Image (tube, rainbow, N blue to C red; front, side, top):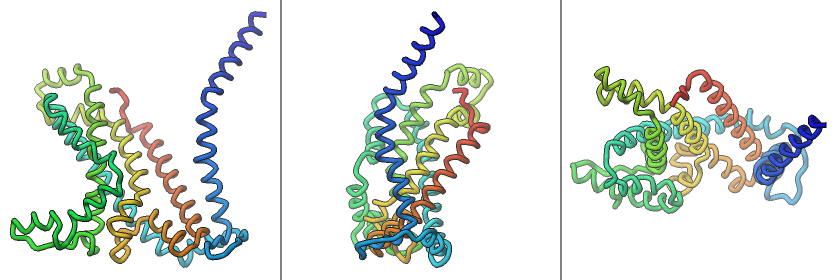
Amino acid sequence: MREKRRGALKRRREFCDFACGLPALIFFAIFTYYPILYLLKISFTNWNLMKPTYQYVGLANYKWLTGNGWNKFLTSAGVTVLYTAGEVLITIIGGILLAVLFDCMNRMFKWMRAAIVIPKYVAVSSTAMIFLWLYNDRYGVFNYILSLFGGSGVNWLGQKSTALASLIAFGGWRTVGYAMLIYLSAMKGISEEYLEAAAIDGAGGLQKLRYIKIPLLAPTTLFLGVTTVVSSMKVFQAVDVLTGGGPYGSTDVLVYYIYELAFVNFRIDRAAAVGVMFFGALMLFTAVTMKWSNNKVNYDA
């Protein structure tokens, strides 16, 4: 009798736990899983915004993607990878360096930390408009600073050699403060016993950073690396405002390419096919990274 009561009580608790998570599950089903499935459905049609109807055409869009559209897809994918690599490097390296710097400062410098973090939470379109002025080749602030040192003006956003780098610098400027804040919080969680033991062994500040702090910050680095990669690969607003995918496609990232297919060329079907491929690449990257991290990342902190 007691066993039956315990079993009934356990099932009731499990049902209550499931009921508590059900609203979140419904939310994700409506706003995440259903759009993904609908995107997959569209990729099997010939949906053109210029036509009132569409039919199912099987794998026609994927044949186009791996045929005539493959070179453009690879070009956009390459630009996306370059942009992502640049933003991740700025975010991770800059975040660690700033965290180490502010970890040594007292509370009087809190306002400086706030000033570095704020860009992350300001609308991309607003900050991009400011950078349009800063990057302007005729009256921009950056070219004015160069002129003070005898340098000539640079068309930052109008030439292939500097457009992508300028875009990466803008993205890194927005995210480095957030990474600093996360790293700083993680550093505060490192046990003082490790640092004291290292000090007794004669380790200096750089040695503590290299052999203690950075290894113990590996979970934080993994978190920031994965989230920064996923967010930077989906960059759109900065490209739309600053470069419009140009010049000559040098900043035409995948999401902007999908936008052009859907709302410039009116080919929703082909945009959906590219979107499905892009989604699969993100899922594959995340799975491989998490699998690799199980054996490489130290969670001892």
